[in-house]
Length: 477
Image (cartoon, rainbow, N blue to C red):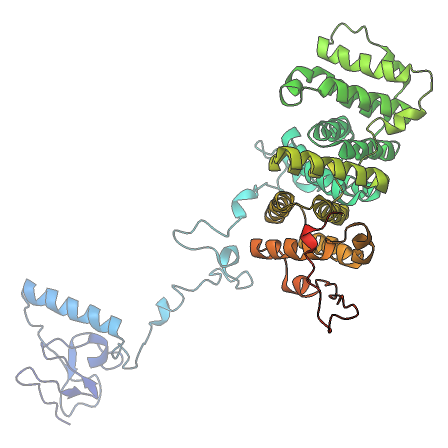
């Protein structure tokens, strides 16, 4: 079989193998098995007996670079490889990029758990582990302490300690909620979650210091709280230590609360009466480290404890405030503040007096007394003043709409009794409700339920059934 040489740079088949147009043949593909490289079989020769070496063409440098570039790009593009198969990889380069062990040992797993490789730091978190040579303990660089610490590890929960400011920010909301619900047991359970023996004196200090900025009712609740926490959350030493902190800070407390020595003296006397603090704490007035303001607080406590009627009166050291006062007392105080308002027409003072009563649930009594006072006045100036007061109380939310409506309905229900003393009560109430309606703080349902007295016909004998005209405003009562 004769072999035709490729002409004009075209590809030809030599023994079934393509030949490149540039005259270069693949040495492995063109040579028969066992024949030297560069030899070509001659026609009529079955084997390697008649071999003729083919002279290699002389290539210039420019053509060599071009051939090298073409071969490199073809190998990347996945064209036919050396053996004539696509994506062929030489056997001796088969395991070049393999991650398996080359020495025949190992399980064939990737190094470093898949985090190894060129330019890689390793598995995230592996830098925190210190490598220790555990096999050779005779190594001069072997660290026995590091070896023992690496094997003898005991994990413990570490809770960062709170600062005084963080502790105060966490405790203050608990005390403010206590002023709303008044449950000392709930406060104790909330404090048990994070209170430590070192913070117990600070707890008593914060409780009393917050009471300085509140009213008498909250101070009474604070004294009750200290008494209930005694023996469960705080001890007598803790309360005394808290009072000591307040005595030391007394010059600063006076700047915000001028009556701070008087208030602190009441707290100390009440704590002694509740058996939370020993009496000798209040009797030890001559202390060298005390400032004049702190000594004044101890003198106040000593004077309260030295009264002849005993310590029973100290239960009312903060007075009786809020809902604990009798209804007659509250009604009398409301009538007094309404009369003061009608004389001065000072809305801010009236608001302050109403807030000091601390009876949000009893404001309907204030509305009732004000309306009755308006019916008794029999003049439009009082009606205008009370209407202005009601409107301001509604806008500032001092009196809720429910309490306002309840007060008006109480007047509606008692009109049959009120009219006995005030004959013109229905007409005055009608005029006052219309004025409040124009002010815009009464509901439509309340205006609709306004009671009215039926007109009486004054008919006598010989009048022919005519209704006598009666001018009620002109009559003298």
